[in-house]
Length: 230
Image (tube, rainbow, N blue to C red; front, side, top):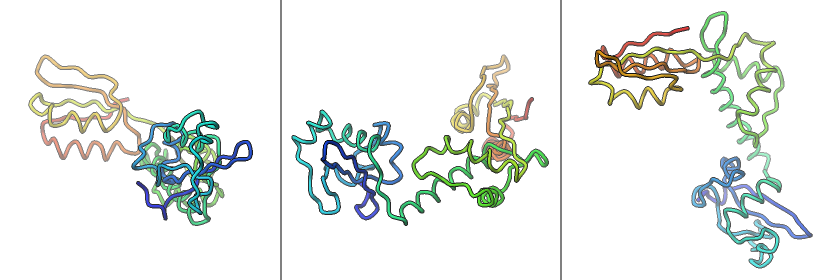
């Protein structure tokens, strides 16, 4: 479980009663979906009426309000319908983490159309600061990235796109390379040739295709052929 000192309070108030749980700040999105691990994502399996004082909410009241005492379902309801209580330091830490994730995603999936190479992370971060972009610590990265792109496009040349790679692998190297290749992007097409080679078309983020080609090439040596296709 997450340490108590690192946890944040999720609070839900209803019918004059208050319910609180202690959660991992990095797990808020997972908890909202109900697909989370009790051991990893909560600091305690208790529902409190005041977490700071350690005052536990009565089980009968919890069941009356939430319809269950299942901590997974109760935690999901509290996080989805309540409020997250953050200290200034916790909010700043979460914002910085989300900001880094957004920058990393833009680097992976975008290119500078003037150079056909990824924009450096520092350049993207500087553009975000110039645009005075506010990062929501609780919104998913995918939801915020479009907003960030809209704000920084007037400041730096950037285009989000994917590229396709045609890959041909010698049959005796297929087992060694398939996992690496399939993890690198989206498999559009795959087939075995009459000559015993396995071939595929892989769609990858534009900013990453050079690294992906290099990684696969180093691992495969002369047993693979890779080329960028339109």
